[in-house]
Amino acid sequence: MYRERPSRVPGAVVWRRPGASPGATLRILPDGCMDLLWVGGELLVAGPDPVAYLGTGTGDAAGYTGIRFAPGTAPAVLGVPADELRGLRVPLADLWPEAEVGRLAERVHTAPRPGVALEELAVGRLASAPPPDPAVPGVVAMLRRGAAVAEVADAAGLSERQLRRRCLPAFGYGPKALMRILRMDRALTLARTGVPYADVAARTGYADQAHLSREVKALAGVPLGVLIA
Image (tube, rainbow, N blue to C red; front, side, top):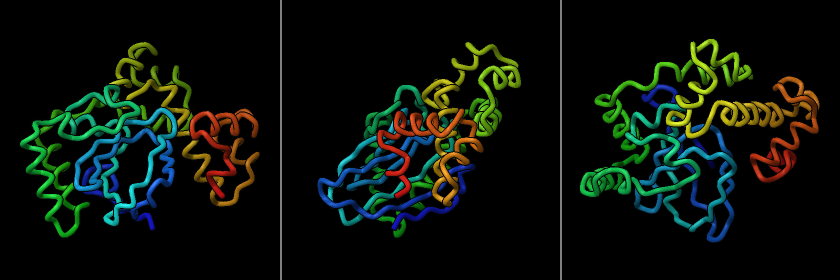
């Protein structure tokens, strides 16, 4: 069973998922977030997904442990712009010195709770990292509410082009893409509570149910009904 809890890192959650059967398809939906993962005895980074990421189960009994950072906060921990990792899963050793990653991996491996060790790693990095872009929280909040990109740019005191330049390293994609992803996330949350699809569309800013269906299929790769079955 998937489990998560709030992290000491602002906006982040620490989570754990059992290992998937060998060969099973894992569909990871885009959510605007980035994760630091402990999988198969290795530290990995999951970059921001523009569409659903399809992985394959390995049957690892230890499962998957991770810390999921709120949109726009992982680059401060990792020291890498989000757009360089868009749609990727990469070993942490590709981003940081191999010797350092080796020490960190040993610490996570020997920890009673790997999730706590990942959290401590992130907290330590944030303590010495430059502060994140101050525009990020406001941009995310407005896009999550469904605000238009022009409205978000105006509130941030930026042109739309400047806003896009600020969003790419923070989120991995521009504000319009992030808005679509956050809107789908809101729609799925509502649909899973049993709200009729037409009402979901109206309450989350889609033109109609057909628009909702097209967007979910484009971002998730499968129809809405498959995701909430």
